[in-house]
Length: 158
Image (cartoon, rainbow, N blue to C red):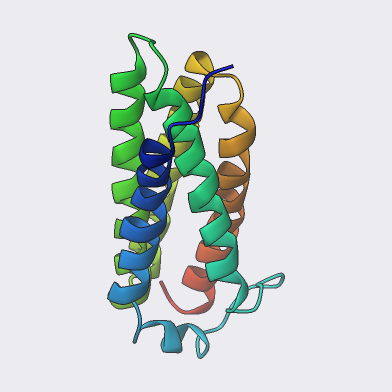
């Protein structure tokens, strides 16, 4: 069992949690108010739940990226690159959905994001099997977010 390298672990967690999560929160701060006013599909959770769930997911994916980063796999660079691209799409989705209010376009971005998460999960899994359990909640949540996003697009005219 390898010793935990705390500085790289905290950086790995900080990248999704602070840069993507915190950056999205700052970029969409005023736009979040409008989320409460739009029509939402059944099973839509209360607004306060989103930052809680996303914080947990960002921490889990940060730990997964740390496990991949510290491996000696020749594929870790590719896996971490795809991971970085999916993080960018995660951030982009927030801007398109909340700031631009382009619900149909955000569905398309979410589909690409979902595929990138799936590819990231597979690449991570091939390097360290434990990462599957860290990435799977993210994939499931974005699947649910797809249902919500499609519902919002349909109910609010795209």
